[in-house]
Length: 153
Picture 1 (cartoon, helix red, strand yellow):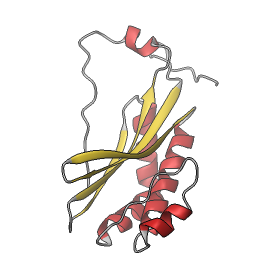
Picture 2 (cartoon, one colour; picture 1 turned 45 degrees about the vertical axis):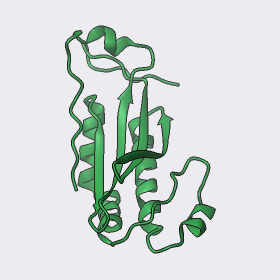
Picture 3 (cartoon, rainbow, N blue to C red; picture 1 turned 120 degrees about the vertical axis):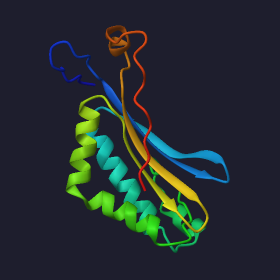
């Protein structure tokens, strides 16, 4: 795995993780995730999962699981078209992708949450830079707060 050098005085980030979670009935459930060596691959994986979830709308969950790949997230049953359309819009919007790329490059998470208003189902796609060797932890002050988690519909 190749590490990209950061600007002087900044920590090196060696890896990125991405995960998709669903919140329903007050419970957070993981649908799947990956660790990848660069932010472009992480965002490509998130876009693919967003499109898979959106394309699974209206299908039987058992049928949708049949085309589930080894690194793909589990399918979700949406009750309206709002959430799938929001996932498709995010996956196809160049500006959203550039914003997510910039957030990851600056060490912040990139998050997208879509809501199925009919049942209150919330699906969150997120990516975070991860420092596998602890270099960023040593460089950051001990009282440095983690970035807040923000959600957008």
